[in-house]
Length: 249
Image (cartoon, rainbow, N blue to C red; front, side, top):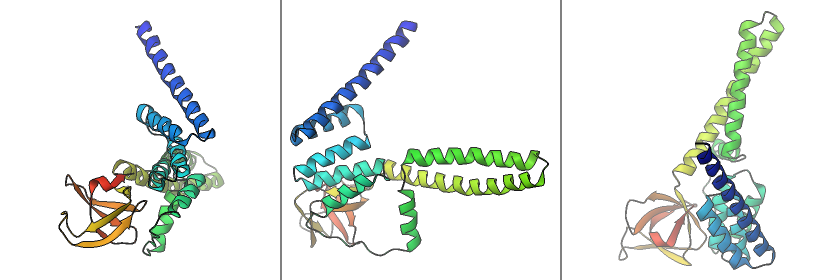
C-alpha cells in the first residue's frame, strides 16, 4: 500500500516538473521571438496539463505578435474568463480588438447591470469563493458575540458586524456563482474566419443579412444543429453562421 502511495506521489511530482519545464521552454521560445514554436508549446501545455489563465495569456501574446488577431482575441478571452480581474489581459484584449475590421458599439444597458458585471469581474472565481467563506466565518463569529457575551457594546458590534458580513457573504456567493455558470455553460464565441455572411436561417440559400469579420465576439443562442449555429453580436444583431466559422471561448 505504501509503495503504491509513493509511486502515485512520484508520478504527480514528475507531472508537475514536466509542466514547469515545458512552461519554461515555451517562455524561452517567446523571448527569442520564435512565436510560432512558442504558440505550439503553449497549446501543448493546455492540451496535456489543463487550462491556465497565464498560459492562455501567453498564447494570446504569441498570436498577437504573429498578427493573428482572431486567435489572439480568443485566447485573451479564455484567459480573462479564468482571471477576470487581470488588468494586463484586459489591456491586451483591447489592443487586439482595436486591430479588427468591425468596430462594435455595444447597445446601452441599465447602469446597475454594468455595475454588477464590473464588480463580478473584478476578481476571479477563487477569490470570490475565499471571500465568501471568510465572510461567513466572520458572520458566525459576530453572531456568537451577540448571543453569548453580556456586554452591550460588544453585543452591538457583534450584531452589526454579522449583518455586514451577511451582505458580503451573499454578494460574494452570487458573484462566484455568476462566474461559475459563465464558465460551465460557455455561450460566447469568437469569429475566426476572415469574413462571414450571416444568414436569416440555417441554410446556405437563405437571405444574407449582413457581413461580419474575424475577431468579432458573439453570443451563442442555438447550437442544436450540426453545421449551423445561431448567434447574437455585441451590437444586438443576430442570425445564423456556419459552425466552423466561430470557436467557443
